[in-house]
Image (cartoon, rainbow, N blue to C red; front, side, top):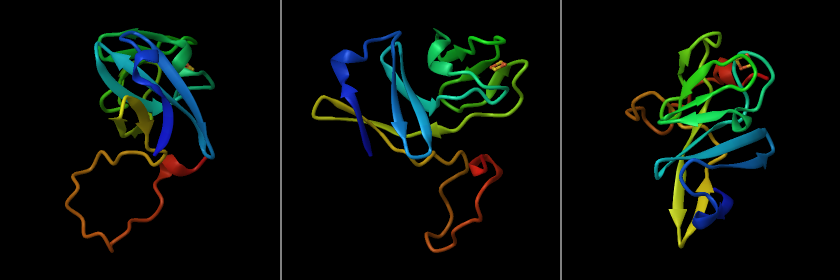
Length: 123
Ligand code: FES
């Protein structure tokens, strides 16, 4: 887990960005709920952290695609591919994010049966 910031520095309606070895992650506070996504629109090159937060969605600042913060799935064109979602935790008043994306699949697999790299991991 990567430390993002103290929770008071991320009030509702705000976003914090952390840089990881594999890219930027944006952590949004949507009405008190924290959600983390890859900070890159799936349509073209734009930071979602520069976009607009409305409810549980973020609107890309470049062409206006919208994404559900809970799932990373696009909810408005022109983006059609999802962005990756990351687990977020608050511990001792600090916000942490997992650099590994959260799987959107049910967690019923055996631990030793690691799946091949997904297309989303190819950059
Ligand atoms: S870059 Fe985000 S909608 Fe085009």
